[in-house]
Image (cartoon, rainbow, N blue to C red; front, side):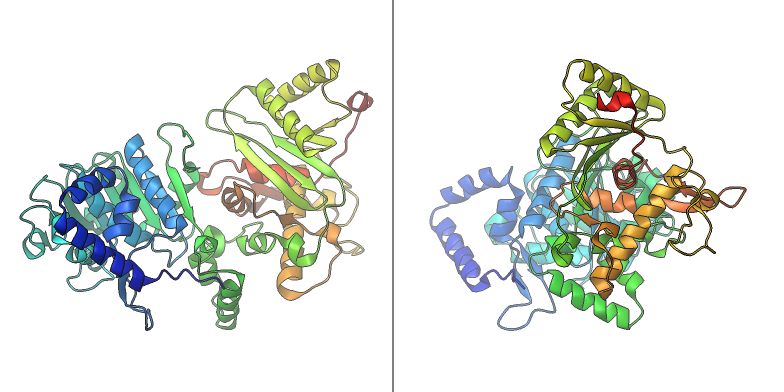
Length: 537
């Protein structure tokens, strides 16, 4: 396992030399502060501390705070939320240091932005502030302040006078950091920034949301996951993954994900150890929630458990699955306002690429998908034929007339159509099992169940060494940029039954957004091959 192990002795010596240089030449401080005003990462790495009671000698328990790359991205995300005046949500694995990052960012804001009002809240008062307890938010910030050199502090600042219970005041520029807990969150007046820690765990979150709506434009929710029946989950589903430098629609929650793979001290060996321990203790659902960020860990009727999906990430490398087989693209067409177009591309059973976009009309989106098909060398192109999908057919007909398809086969995929092979039994060679026509309400249900079976078999093969033919499996490339969103979408739909007892799919339980990326996988791994003579001309 690669270790994130900064040399704290050398870093401390560097800080001591910098302190001496500034005291000898105060002009250095003037220059540094001009840098820090716009660069919280430099300020944190130069002066802030963190605390880990688990640290073993020779490492100190209180150490310089040196941000690892994902923590630096979190700082940039917080800056972007402030700049755009938009709310954000940090979905995290436990033990990623997210709260420490937000605390250090709050101190930077308190120091360098005059009149800033920063609010902090959590579900219990003792989590917000408990004097002397570094597990509490405000004690973390008081520790950072105590370790700052005097020239970095506001003139006249006294930690005992100005950093009291649930309140930190900057006597020079008037900035404040205040704390609240439980149902009182958001009652303290207007805030430039309001941070809610462990936001998925509040008892009455609707009351808090109502209060904060009038309190701040920049509400930041930080939490590990806790099922789907809470406001945190709904904000997460309604949000959009943040990417540095990417312009996002207004009034959209900027979602920042901190996965355990983003921690430089955690790898597959670390995870496997955690998994075996949780399995032995019967606590895999806890591992799924706390480490894998699995919202569905405690949700019944989920079609594809997230634990199966995660086993399929880079399964091709672990099971030596080649890219041999059909090269196929599927496109899910945006239906209405806020919906997105999406494509998925597979080589054999290996998912190589997927992406989603919201801009452009059906014609533009079709051409974009066709260009992706040419780029990836796919011969088969499936599209969702219902509703606005008719526009895809019209555009591909035009492209065929222009000789722009280069032999590509275009095929409609109708989710409401009858199941494929309706007289075949759903369990191969088990003639006592129901037929596809008896079991599935429509093609959509059959496709999602087919996807479920692929993920289940892959999980069994990866985790338990069960042998299956490779063409029964599925592998997701870890380099796919939107993989966190895809994993979440795949484990969102639940199963329900029609009045005649046939399996149906509820793609948007609890008011979730349409899982466009996941719908593409259901299509691309369940080819219909309903080809007419016009499609091959």
